[in-house]
Every structure is written in structure tokens, then in C-alpha cells.
Length: 535
Image (cartoon, rainbow, N blue to C red; front, side, top):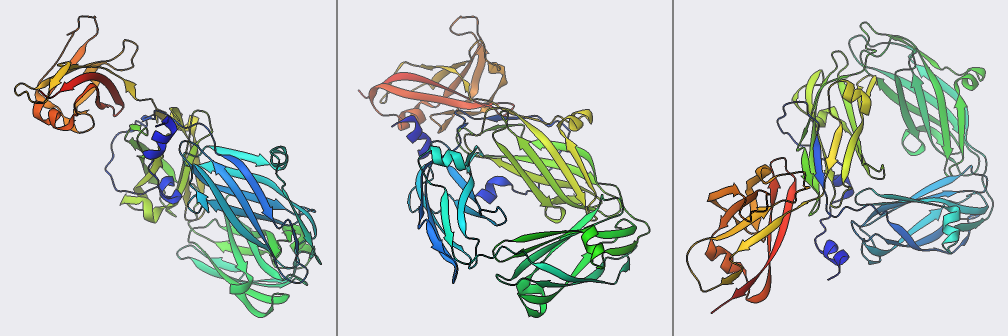
């Protein structure tokens, strides 16, 4: 079997959401953030686009939507394709769409070499002219990423173009009115709600949704919310409608005058309009809300302690979980959200996840509590020193405090995450010829590590030693010596003879594999060849 085929046979698959992060309650102690991650082999190659077809490549959206099917062949030899995102832009760049394709749904093949299809309907009144795929972002299971732009697609012999005909809608929605009620709230003790009312028009495709951005006097606190046509319209229609959204501001927000700093409106063909604070003021709209807040919270949460467990993981045979325990304080508004990012040595692989405090806290509370985040590193993750590049903490009034790599070091934390290869061991099985009919003393195995190894046999955890992945050692006797007299220490261990005989076949060259772990969790493996007879 080819090496790549062996890798595929032992590949363990998880849904992407599970690969990214898990939450679990585990005790913690200390502040050492060292983690050793073992991967032999590791996967450093991103997935690739082997084929692309767009059918049909011409559609008319003048009277109805136009359906287009994208067919793609994606290859990734080792860890497997995870997902891709295609970005499409109109001729004027005013309209755009993104399309995602996931590994679970090939029409043929698999995540190592699969054909995928995705149908997409361009809405009625989509802009006429030559649309193009501006970028394809492809990611594999271990987060290796390839970005393919328009010219790359052409250079590969594929067409990135879709031709749209019909009567286009190029006009973005218009905001005709904005009202805020009440315009003064007191959040000293309780959260308060504010009603926002909008009148929006869009002549052809119709209004789709808008986003409102509100900022505090210092600009350090902010809130944003959406108003969607189908959920918040109280009168009229999508061409000329009144919309109302009630939004809650939490207790202890910053005191003073908050302002709507921007509103972005979209129609059903993705035309958009940005409206600035000054444009709203010039149009005579209400944009300000007065906040009374005593006391108010203007400080971000504080990272008091950090622990990582385990510090050594081996992704050679399958994915492994790293648990991050963060002790976080925020004495007024309370912790709302935690985000942590780790990046591989080359920067090509990275994992991050934000997690709400109500799910991550396992001891204490939002004002002082232990938060547990678990990141699963997939099989074949990159070997070397990974880094915690950022930890960002957010409280319930959107104050933020972020810790970068150097800041964590300055605070006494070790933000490095080490991934190492499985250590090679030299194994000598005694006797060299094993008779399956013989009885008596246990068999002996001598384990030696190369002179240039980062470990010694004293570092081996004997409880983890296995023969052919099945048989544990006899805990007595075992000893360290120099049995082959080469000046390098050996570890002598013994296995029950009958157990070994029960798993071996007769042959002149039978492979014996001895594996285990060092006390820090790193793995080792060695192979010896013996003769097995039955007479």
C-alpha cells in the first residue's frame, strides 16, 4: 500500500465545528503554557483546485432569477479537503456574493480527491454584464489554505466568468427617516431598551436589510444590530416600508452621548449604501442617545492566570485536544466573551474560537471565574513551535482587552505551543527466533534512543509501552543499563511470552513494533524483525 493510502486508511474525521473548539470542565494549576504537539508525518500542503466548470455561463435575470451550477474537483492527499469559499463580483463591483462548499457532500470521490457541485441562483434584476470569480479560498482539515484569484483560474485553463443579461438594478436603498425613542436612558442599575424606527425605499429589487453601528463618547464601546425586511417591517412593503427594531443596552455602559456613526443598507441584489453620521445629521435624522450610568465600566477584563493541558500532544495517529484554562476578572460589567488564537510555525495553519462566558466558565462567575477552552488539533498538524498570538477578552458592555504574544511573555506566561515528531527508538527483541510452541520465561526487549535524541530512556513512561500496540510490559523486572555495551543507555523490559506468541504469525521476517510515550507525553516507536517458527 502506498504511504498516502496508509495515511488515508487511518484518518479520523470530525465535523469542522468540532475540530475548531470544544468546552470541557477540567481542573487546572500553574501558569506554564508549554505544549508539545507531535505529528509524524505532518501535513504542510494546502488543497488544490483540479477542475472548475460553470454551467450555464450565461443567464438572464430580467424576468426571474438565473440558476448556475459550479462544478469543482478538489484534491488534498493527506489530511483532506475541509471547505472552500468562492467570491463573485459584478462588473461595477457594487454587487457581490460568496458561495461555500463543504467536504461532506461530494457528488463523487472523497475529501482526498472529490467532485463537488453547488447550484446558485442569481436574483432577479442582478447587474448585467460579465461577473467573475475574484477569489477561491480553499482550506484543508489541518487549516492549510490556498487562495486562487481570477488570473490563477485562467492560468489553470478554466473560465472564471458568468455573463448576466436582463434589466439590471444598480440603485442602492434609500433611508428616508430615522427616529429614536427614548433618546435618554439610565443604565446605572438595569439594562434599558431603545426603539429605532426607519423608513427605507428601494425601487426595483427591494430592500433586504440594514446594519446600525452605535458608539460611546470615547469610541471604545460599541453596539451594532441588523434590521431585516422580513422580520421588522411594521407597514408598507419592501419597496417602501417602515421598520422598527427594539435594542437593549446593558447596565454600566459608558456614560455620555452615544451616536449612530454609520448605517449600511442592502437590497435583494446586494446593492449597498453607506450612510455616515454627518450625512444623517445633514438629513435632519436623530442620531444621539444620552446615557446616564453611575458607576460606568470603561475597563476591559483582565487575564489573571493561564494554564494549558496537556503540554505535549501527538497528532500522528489522530486529532488531539489542547485545553486552555483562563482565570479572568471583570468586577463591574462581567466577562461576556473569550477568544483565543494559535498559529503554526510557518503561519500557514491556525485555529481560533470565541466562546461566550456562560458556556466556558466552569468555576466562579463572570466577575471572577475559570474559563475552559479546548482546541482540537487535527491529524497531521504542522510540527514545530506554535504560538498563542492573541487572547481577547470582552465584557458585557463591549470593553475589550487583548493580549498578544509578547504581552503574554511579559506577564510571565509561556505562549509557545510545541509540536514535535515521534521519536525514533532502536529496539532489540530477544530471542531473535521465537518458537510458538515453547513455554517458559518472558521475552525481553531492549529500547535504546539515538545519541542525538532530545530524550533519554530515563524519560520513558514505562506504563505506556506497548508491543504491536496490544501488549503491555510486565512491570517487574525492568532496568536501565548498557546491554549492548555501546556507551548508550538501554531500557530493558519484559513481556509475557504466551501473550506475544498469541498475536504473531509464523514467518522468517516478522515485524515487532514497540511504542510508548515519554513522561512529557511525546511519543516514540521502534521496529525489530524476528523469525517466528512453530515446531
